[in-house]
Length: 361
Image 1 (tube, rainbow, N blue to C red):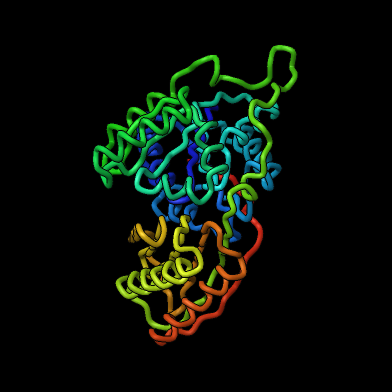
Image 2 (cartoon, one colour):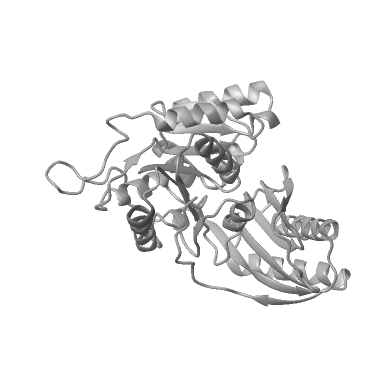
């Protein structure tokens, strides 16, 4: 079983990259398993992947490089013993250090080989991220073996070249490559790099039967990140169409972004909301901060269900240098104002815990 670790800060494009890698792997006849990690109690990306026809195992309410490491070990063992996939893809939370995850897995008595650790960066906002959380971002970059400069279609050549120079100075040993969700050639190149065998990437138990020593320092990534998170679920009653749901989520996220920027004008992070309307999962997200907000909407077809005027709205917000109680206040108030304007009633529910069933593609 070969392990792909796809890391990177919040909103760097991990889920899109994972989707494309899965398409590439399955087209090549590989049997794939997927583990997705969300830092909040409620996961959204796992539902997005599953709704798109890609089953996933989701570990929530923590980071698999520290607080959820036991759950990760159990899940990996189950997947290896029962399903034995060719490839296990892990998409950890953007608040993780992927190399630390790899080093924890080295202590398991499971035959695995490890592809080079990938860290994705958003070329349009890495500078702001470093300004906000320098120690965390630098640690992620220094641990990377492949750095994907993502979203190059949104930046000019000078900015990309400056980023390449900076990253080479930060981590001269890493392989640096340009990437874009619109460029399948970059995914093909990444796939080729991650399938190569080498002494460094094939590792488990040494010949003496003893676990290998850890390579990276054991750090609490969430504490270092200075990121506050808030997630949950609203039970919504009323009338929603796909179009109306998209507009509602976009307006809520815009209001949340504006209010957060009043507390921290240079915040970076990721705000995501999703609601299922009949046969469509509507997902809206915002990355970056006050000066460079990127709002994206996805409409993903799935098996039709009857809502009967009742919906579940899931949300996850993770932002830098804003107190958690203030973030909760902003989101709850924004939802309340905009739901009332649309004549929708709602009730907030917080779900804790994680699913236990590993899923194999």
